[in-house]
Amino acid sequence: MPLHFCHPSAPHTKLNVPEWYVCDLMLERALDAIIRRLKKLDRDHDIPYLAGYSRDGTIIYIDRHMPTAFKHKGRKVETDRFLVLHEEVEKTMIDRLNLHYLHAHQIATRVERDAVVACGINWNAYDDFMQDNVKYVGDKRLTKVPADLDLKPYRDEHDTELLERMARAIERGHHPINHHAQKLHARIHVTLSDIRANAGTARHVTRPEAKPRKPKRASVNRR
Image (cartoon, rainbow, N blue to C red; front, top):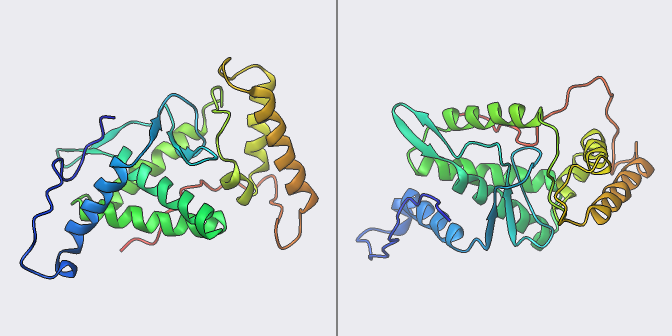
């Protein structure tokens, strides 16, 4: 997997200062370690809101239309590793600590921001690039959705409109022929039924149809 590392050789030379003095260096190495432990990166599917993960957490999905890098002040900035970091942290928080998606997403976004800054990349430029591509990818039809995509983020964000679009795409046959379309379709409708059954409760709050959709990748407060 051709992901760029902050430290390709990842040397672990003992430093002559306390580790907390060099937190950026430690964070870069932690990022490298997470990337090396990634089981599979998939860039062959349509993923709403840029990135996601399989239900079992073994696959990180990045939308096939998402550029792998952007240029900022003459520098090519590769972004896949930061998206992988975000999704790995988010999935771990949900599965291991049973956090609500929105809470896990906020923690993952802040970890992602710190990693971006630690690698010497301007967060505002990076975040603007991501937000631009959220809008762009969101306008495309969902024609190639992975059957094992974890739907918890969409369920927790009460995104019934997006789930319905995904179901309609499968009904039209817009999915890879080697995927279990019926299972995915059934799972989407089970999720929709759960949201509708609990609409208006503390667990699920319906949104006005006319209100614009808020992207999954909400910007954090900029410094």
